[in-house]
Amino acid sequence: MLYSCRHEKRGRRFLSMAKVAFIGLGVMGFPMAGHLKTKGGHDVTVYNRTAAKADKWVARFGGKAAATPAEAARDADFVFTCVGNDDDLRSVTIGKDGALSGMKSGAILIDNTTASAEVARELAEAAAAKGCGFIDAPVSGGQAGAENGVLTVMCGGDQATFDKAKPVIDAFARMVGLMGPAGAGQLTKMVNQICIAGLVQGLAEGIHFGKKAGLDIEKVIEVISKGAAGSWQMENRHQTMNEGKYEFGFAVDWMRKDLDIVLSEARRNGAALPVTALVDQFYGEVQKLGGNRWDTSSLLARLEKK
Image (cartoon, rainbow, N blue to C red; front, side, top):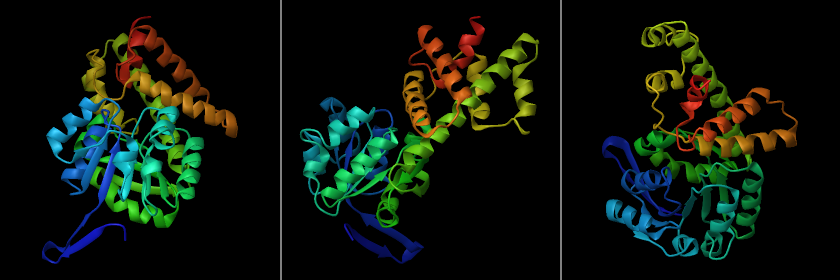
């Protein structure tokens, strides 16, 4: 095994400690790396393009900061990446001073970026050429899920590599599933975003209709949330939507990036996604309202501007 383990009979607690690198300390990566250090008990080295963010992480959690992804990955058993898009991901993994150039044979690269299935397969091949494992592992649960360590992680890769990686990923997750070979994690995340897009639009239209009809939205939601219309979005976003507050969670810019990935994949595989394509256009209208950094529930704002 790549990392040392000890078994404590008292409480049947199984504790394992690995050397871990975490590359990308954005709103998701910062707390995820923190859970690997505090809850996972791992020896964590971080890298971030803006060094001050890495220094801030070290000041809060301990561990070490590295000057390049390759340096962070050197001698690590597991290397996590959580960056913006396909190009960012290539840069920190296979680019100059990328993580793979510093990884040892037998180490595992785990990518938590929401990216294309194509780049996942590309990195799986690059990792295999280095004698390393690879798991594409996009997450769902937003900033709150990252901060609370309760993300859902959708993985693509082979079973043996997944079995080694899962106990480490568990530090910031409440659900970790292997969905199929490399790329399957990203494809599953696309399904997730398709479903969310439709749900949020439906909730926005429902609240908008209720207001126009003169209903008390809080009373409406109290009743319908207990029936078939209920959802996480309804439970957690209806109140802020009703108040016109959109500063809670996943930003419109990020959602449009994800939906672009979804629609590009749909063009490749022939899937018909008329609602998703329409909601993507609606998010474009929200951006024109200045809502680039508003959360995804801001679909209501475009209805109320009409």
